[in-house]
Image 1 (cartoon, helix red, strand yellow):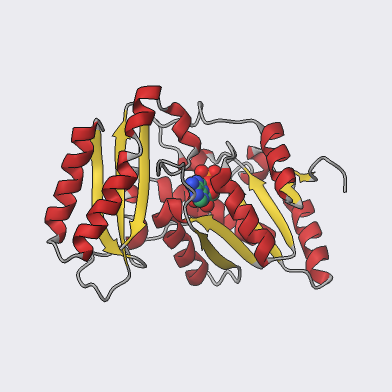
Image 2 (cartoon, protein in one colour):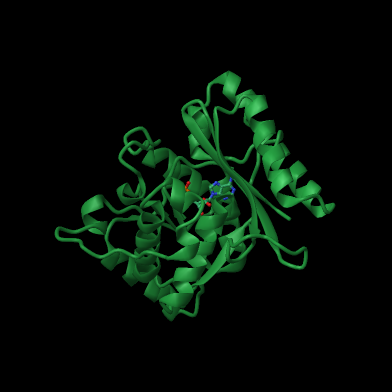
Length: 282
Ligand code: AMP
């Protein structure tokens, strides 16, 4: 083994390498990322290493999932650092294409997932899930991996990806990995670096409040009252705006109505320049 990670730049090379492994009877795991690596991403690599024989990570900051006023320009980019971290974790190969490889001239196709992709993040970030669904579909089709790993941190995204894989007969098994958190509960995110020290102190209130709201609902309190309580808690702690705090069905993200359903409490709230999202199970 050399100390540098094998990096491939073209879809053709990616396919060739993965097919060769599969031809030897090896199962291949895929870990899509936009870089800015932290232990949350590395948990996906660990899950892939545990469940498959070869792990391929991908690194591509996808312009199509950023809105016009979002942080595409500022998004952390350091391929050498990310490649080193992937390598240290045991990743076998990195696919790091450029934009022209992913979106050749004349690119005109998009994948959009209705209903589950229209609510919550889909409503607050128009076009976001179409950007995500399009790039993830491309990566799944390009790689033809046996299994692909996505974080529960982006819970709605995980459900959107499960839906598109099912709908489009993509045979890769889509696996969710639990959220990795700081000791104080804040979910790791590449965007946490936008927080000032004062905001960083407030940020863990999001997770604490979601846990408390889930507990209230679990105890039989009215759902709308628990959601409104959580919104007030976040604003009182210093969050500048709460986009939503809501209890939903864990698979469809429709309204949560009965304790027999698997449920999820999801939230998005702004803290200064950063917009934080998180979720907990019910
Ligand atoms: P990103 O690079 O932010 O697009 O994320 C790439 C993958 O890492 C997605 O599947 C995310 O859900 C996952 N991820 C991001 N943060 C975390 C976290 N704190 N815990 C687990 N997975 C995460």
